[in-house]
Length: 203
Image (cartoon, rainbow, N blue to C red):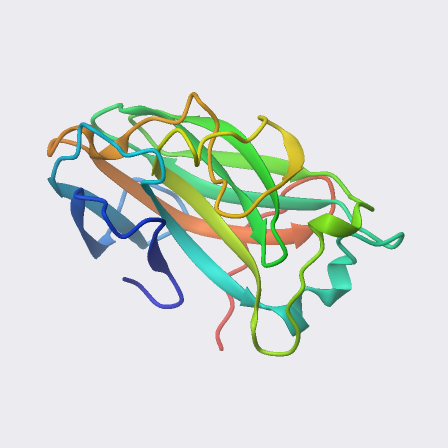
């Protein structure tokens, strides 16, 4: 999709399909571009291990400063601007660690732009830490698009263990209709208990 973002599939048998485009926007101050996900093929019957999410993978060496799973663990904040013009509901966003730890929180996406923030508390539980090193994937920041019964077992607003868990039982099925689309921009992951203004940086 767009730079550094991928659509992740859990089982490989998901039948929902979508197109992902970079769109010019004029209705959100401070931003000129956004990712648009448009359903092109609906999937109204999810298998238990079916799940799709948009995510960015972060190298292990870049998250060591967070101390996740150690006595030096820090509170994190993940934020994003989102809208769903068709008003199709409750999404789960969060982080997943390569060792199987995950933090998932529900957000309600409306028909106009809104900034969604989740506060990820510090955790000293060792099973939540990454098992990766160096340039291997240490963390995945994501928003779930659909999640079958074996993938929606997360507790809202709490750390948990278990691989490929990306949603709660309230997660909407974005792929329920070809009318559905989701717009995202301004993702930011930072240390601290509150989201700060989005930083536009040139690399």
